[in-house]
Image 1 (cartoon, rainbow, N blue to C red):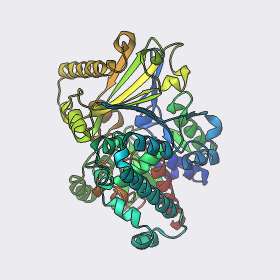
Image 2 (image 1 turned 180 degrees about the vertical axis):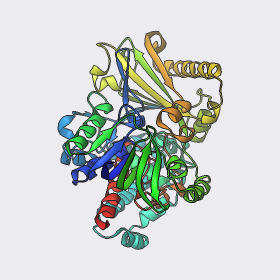
Image 3 (image 1 turned 60 degrees about the horizontal axis):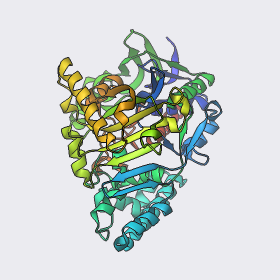
Image 4 (image 1 turned 135 degrees about the vertical axis):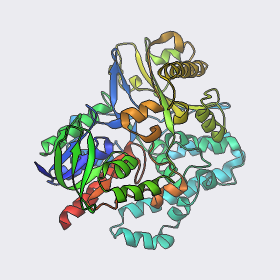
Length: 502
């Protein structure tokens, strides 16, 4: 039986970033992935000549100077892929507003001031507040002092971080902004985190806001599977191993106190000094570990935690360029109203006549993703697992088709003639998310980013099992490709410290 320094369960972004850093630091790593490909819910797939992203994709900090890009440059991943810069975030539509968001806050501030002049003071206050937050956040992240000391000094040195961590987004937006439409537009990106502003942590929203609307973003030529494949190649070139179609069924501990290895569905047993799980936190801690007392203890504490919403994703292969039906920009954020609470409830009720959507035409970034003159589109909106989980096969197929057709009907009001040009259509439901990615109730963002489950309240990466760490959307810092990269990077640091002690 081969011994490893670290075993990583799952080859999503967090698992791969952990394995990449550990391997680059000379550690022998084994990555075990249950699917035949890497990437988890972020992978790409092909159907009838069309390449689709399984979820909506562009990534901040992939351009020069970004922390993700710097890591990929350092570890030799960048030389295996080609980055495509996005010139703007995309088009945002509301009932009374239709505009394009760039990748800088000044243009957004100017647009808001021009359209809501009566709220200019409040808008200025909002941008002043976020500038103060980002300054303190960057200082916190880069300060070369122990974490415990940073936290102890936070009330004095980082008061903006403390304040923001205690507020929902709705509470954070200045009361001086009276126009509800302006407040809604500021909160547009709630759809990238999975909670309306009344429930969403202002802290995590601001992290996502700067990444999407305040900095350059990028796509990967050929699809994001190219990125994950490049990461796998580098991990192997560093001397580590990645095994696909390998399902971990048990995390082995010694006397319930220290993780020492894993067992797979094929009966294989692998030993390691530390283990990082990129699988969801609930299954990791209540099913995989072999210590019943600790499983029971975790099951009790995790039962009170709020899981994120699930999603309905629609993949459309068009027989024309999407620009011919009015898709003028690679990304379209479509909001059928200004009340985000109502839109969120409509999604959970399965009423997509009042919901919010995000639609991406990746072929505007990379024409090679579809046959010449055609387009690959991906739409995402939210959905409640409860409406899908207990349907019969016949009911499930019927609801999936009806939901897809209802969404296409909504899109057609903004993209005239869309339905006539659909050559291929496929949909993924909350049940798909649960089955393919093994996400409890299809929770695509892990634990919901509420105030009580975000920032320093986020579920920790350290576990009660010595040598077992978590990485991914369910733990710190949270969801998104960038968030998962950071989570994996920090899990690798925890593992390196444990290995140094050993």
